[in-house]
Image (cartoon, rainbow, N blue to C red; front, side, top):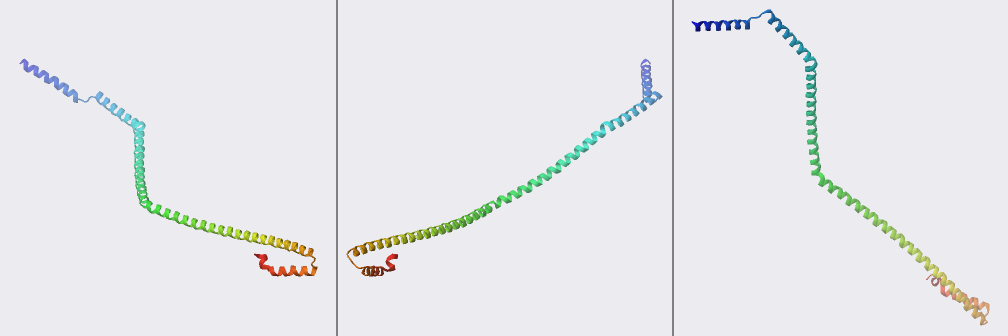
Length: 188
């Protein structure tokens, strides 16, 4: 019986503890309500001072990340467009180089022709000047020869006069000599 009575006492103790565990007395209820109110107030305060700024920060961060992603996408599209444009330009660079070289050759030929024409015109002017100078020199020499002939004729006439020719004979001789020589002699 001892064993039985020991067992009954354990069960009664367990029952008392068990009933106390679920027994809601006023103190427990009061503490529970105050704890719930304190937790609710703490939650409200934390929500106002911590959670709302944290949410705002996270929302701004989320928006900033979305903007960065959009900017990166547009930059990537722009880079792809520029890459295609540069590849197209690289394909056309040979034809552009050839066009530039052809244009440069054409301008060089035009400059060459202009320089040759200018040189020919200058050479023509030089030849004309040389011909004029030669003609002037020729006329100068002819004039000197005429003067020399006149002085020789004068010397001859002086000797003839000295030989006692009369003046009429001297004049006739001089005129005949001049007529015989003519203008062709003076110009050559």
